[in-house]
Image 1: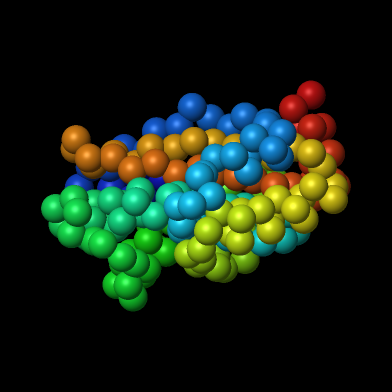
Image 2 (image 1 turned 135 degrees about the vertical axis):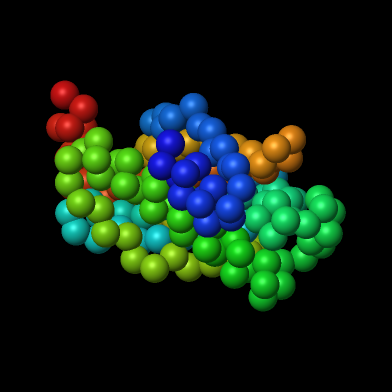
Length: 178
């Protein structure tokens, strides 16, 4: 997986990024990925020509602090909150991983995908995820979702990557699947 190689090169140590692939799931199921009482950390990207919509990489705050510790080479439990340095580490990691996911989609669909610069957000799931899903619900009742593990040695963190294509883009994806 290209993301594993890219992050390993960046961190100068072995990183394994593991996913079971994307599943097409109902929006309701996508919204239920996180407990409402636990803040999430997310990178949100708008998609441009020719694939329109949104991409969202989200993880619970506890997994985000684990990931920050792993990326920064610290013992687990060192990062207790997302400060400026942790945010920068998570943004860069998320940008590399999101780009790899988007490149995989672009290769599979045989078309370029141009995501905008990611926006970093820390808030409750309803504020972060449900606002994007509410917009998607105007067009479709489904999203593409991939649960993903980030593994360094015996340490791991997990997140969810969602692709929320606009209707015209959903038709492009469906035609590529035939």
